[in-house]
Image 1 (cartoon, rainbow, N blue to C red):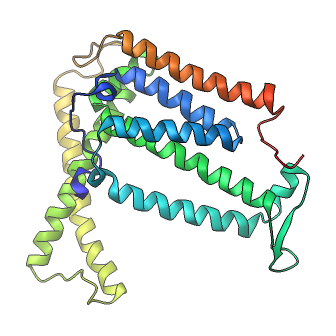
Image 2: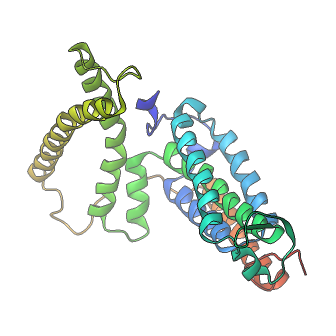
Image 3: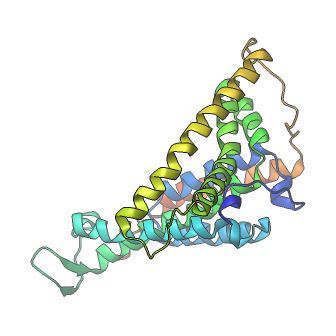
Length: 277
């Protein structure tokens, strides 16, 4: 299950058939539209769209289960820490105070603070499915070709492609080393104390680091022998031409971004939707 966390599995549907450049443009447009606006109505609309697109991509839950757990923990910690460090920030933003109940003189629960924090969490939650779609439905080589097409140096684009390709291999190497160590008597179960388990994990990380360095050296030598980086430009074998669906998807992404800007400046008069005035 963990080995499939960042694996690209080719499928035949609308999302997968889009060009990597198209998915990159749509991801940037929809992410910026959510991050710029604090109108929870529009953010929920984009969140609904991201869930629909996620369903259309046919990504299996086992591919994102671990990632979903980490994201949920992050969102919960963010919600709690935001209140601990800025319990009155919502009042500063909206300029009013509707108190629900008081914990201490500093920590009071208000509708303004709840709206601000719920909006903030919703922003993150709406972007995460978009990021998962982009990562799991885009061939790393095609992604590198897309970055190079919009002006990114092909060396940097290729390095990012190799990084995305290496994540599944690194996870598999970790599992293989862990199984080999457990067969030699290394116990990482809950029966052992926490300190012992941390020490045993470190015993796995050391050979993992050395195997990673060996693989990096092997790939670097192979690329040097083939003259990688000799020319200023290069061609891409997996680059996809833009079709009607690609242009339509990019137009849709631009429309979502334009809608966010329109809601912020023309409707709300600011980035924040204020229902308390």
